[in-house]
Image: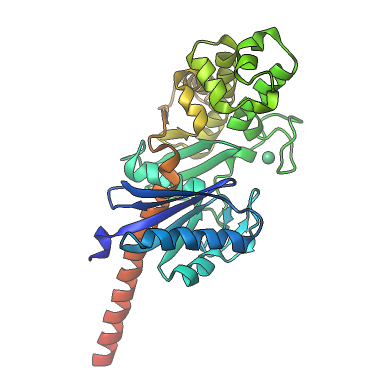
Length: 339
Ligand SMILES: [Zn+2]
């Protein structure tokens, strides 16, 4: 079977779960598996990767494996330098997986993989200059310039969540204060809502009912559902998160000048209650507003599959490239033999 038409596996490794999928060249997920992420050791995470690949290969003819990992990947794609939520510290993940699964393997940052997925098959098709933001525990970020993922000199570009937006603001796990993700992530939304429930605020009556009066049981989907059902506080909280998102996007526009911002993550389920305020603040804070074209701010289309679909496609692209290089090398050696 020609590799270009073959199936590849994409694996999205987050802090809490591993999602693996068999993906065809059109970006369709043929089959999907989920596992909890064993964050205890790098070895345990590799075991899980090897298991899901073996299981999927039992049912499909697979040509390559792409991994989107929640961590900082070195610029060669060989190792994970650091992961805030997993056990990777200078971990040579690509070789470790390749040796176990015996297939061409590529490793990419999870947010970059998601951006690639949206670029190839989702909300950003046809957009050459793109910033992709995923709101979850923190803020995942990626930047594509002229249709290519930008990795930076050391491979760790796109960590927008740790741009300081509030001097001396809220403390962040990264060690600093006032980071963007402390104000505009899914976690920020839940934290604000929980504070109001814990304070027994009358304005939080509906959210209090939904979590049974237990602030720690309150989840992001509970807030977005309450907003959809017309709860005023839930809508206000989403508006605030949207405001902070728009402010950060205006800063990113000054630095990167993209044509489109693609916004993903569970918070987007709230739709315009969230993205409307983001667009408003973006327009009000954009430098040189009124005198420059404005980037579109759109919702991601691939949902939670973006990372694995993107990783699978990167694996396909990479093995095509690899074959082309190998062919060229072979042609070159044959030519030199003849000479
Ligand atoms: Zn931070």
